[in-house]
Image (cartoon, rainbow, N blue to C red):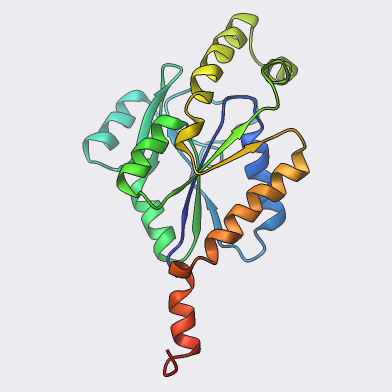
Length: 205
C-alpha cells in the first residue's frame, strides 16, 4: 500500500509541533508514520539537534540542492529557507509509510502542485490573544520578534481555506485525537484498501 502525504501547517505558537510529536510518540505503534525532516538555513534554537529536528545547512549548501532539483518543496520564511528532500519522501511512501510535512502554506502549495492527493491539515489557535500568550511564554523571542510573528500569523491564517481539514487547538488531547482520526481515515480509503481487498477476495471480485 502506497503511503499518504499529510501537510500540517499553522502559525507559530499554535501547537503544531507539539501535536506532531505527541502523534509520533503515542500513536505510531505500527511504525508507519514518518516525519519529514526539513533542511533549513536558520540557526538552531535551544535544544534543537542537527539531523533530528532539522538538517541545518548554509545558504550556499541549500542553493546547491535547489540546483539539482533535490527538494520536494522549499520556501522562504523569516528570511531563512526550508526544504524537504524529495528522494527520502518518495522512498518512504513507496515503502508504505505515511509522511508528515511540518511546513507553511508556501510549501503546501508546492506539494499540492506535485501531488494533488496530499492531505492538508491546518492548526489554528483558539484566539489571537492566546497565540500571543503562548509566544511570550516561550521566553525565546524579544517583543519586536513576537510582534513580527503575530503579523506573520495573521498572514498565515488567511490561507486556512486552502487545506482539507482545520483543527482548533484549544484542548490539546482533543486536538491530538482529531489529528489521529484524519490519519486513520486516510489509510482506509477505497484507493488505499483496494490492493488488500483484491488479495482477500481474488476470485470473488
